[in-house]
Image 1: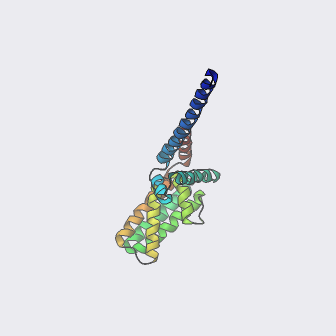
Image 2: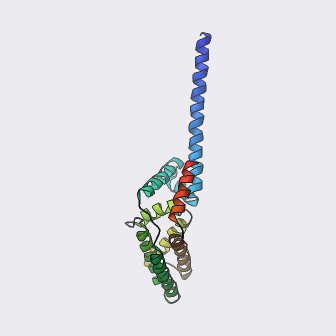
Image 3: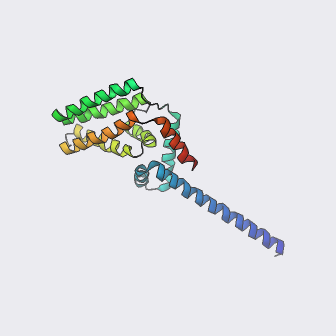
Length: 192
């Protein structure tokens, strides 16, 4: 083998190694960004899918789906009307916790629909909401599960109390936080 051939092989080998290193670095960076972006939802998805790669693909597809939707903050008048309705649901909890939890579930769904989230299925709503609200979406899932248990007569009063608290966390986020700020935050996370 000539000296030139050896040099070519070394250069080609170095380029291949650099490409492999760049690939693994970009995958690691992608994972870090998604883990930071989705917080506990990232871990839930990895556990559910039993595959980091599949979970990350699904989380990225959620982001893409979210970007196609016209999610908008509520006008101030709607915020006030929904806040008033929430107070009534909270008062109802004292006398009828099961009915209050079901009302809270319906009210949060209405608010999400008014904001532009898909409402055809709970799971789709939760998936899209996880892009904007990655921490409180866990609360939403837990509260919804209690509402389903209540529908079967299986929820305790303590379960119902916790569900109300969980619904309240998402309700407050939907009413009081700017989606424009969240969109800018998402863009910042995607650029990193």
